[in-house]
Image: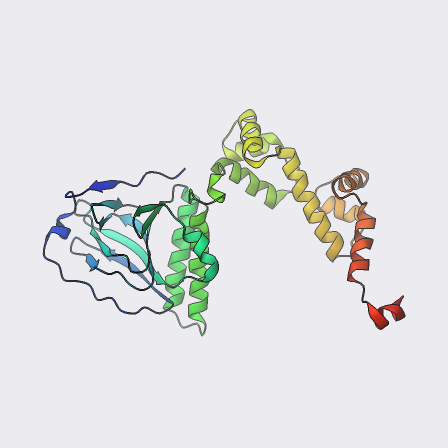
Length: 304
């Protein structure tokens, strides 16, 4: 669940906004320009027409104040603010906080990013997310910090590396975007799913998963089925069979070896479950794949 961002009524803004200000220069930024600022009370940034790119600001500590027509909002640790191109940029250190540490990035998004940037809108062109999960906060902050280090480093392809780090940060943000399908999953259920996907070959019990997810066994079973559409046991088996299909297609390992590698203690039981899922025994599944991959035409005839 996304925590509610603190909204400020019109007229209730920081004193920094009330003083006479000089508009901040709005240069044409490159594909990616980043920074890590630790600012005091005097920090003010005002661009009446915004910039031609996107601007992301992540609050590490302290607090900032963002002004928009008719009101504004406070940022604090874990809040990410995003300005669309040509959206007025009007923000400063919150007076009561006295300091504001922020990681920021001016960027031109790659085409696949557009879907990930569909965040809740506080005002036209001003988007915001509060990252609630501590692990997600850690990942977003680390990725943005890495993007900043890479963008200012000496790597020959530093811009590409930095864009990849920014992409990672945006993907982590997407897991807590209420408009994203990823965020609709209860975080405790997602934690259980991650555990299964990383350890599907190990013996997995409901008790183990419940403890990992900080839920009772009955509560996990209920939530998991409601949100994922299958039981925990069905999900575990799905991960094991998916991996088994890959190993049958990509390796020459025996059926018995694959069964043990994906978490089935009994090769006969594995064969039964695999056939029920695919309609083919593991050996027939592999043969079908080999026929599909066989060369065609004159060379294929010679090999036959």
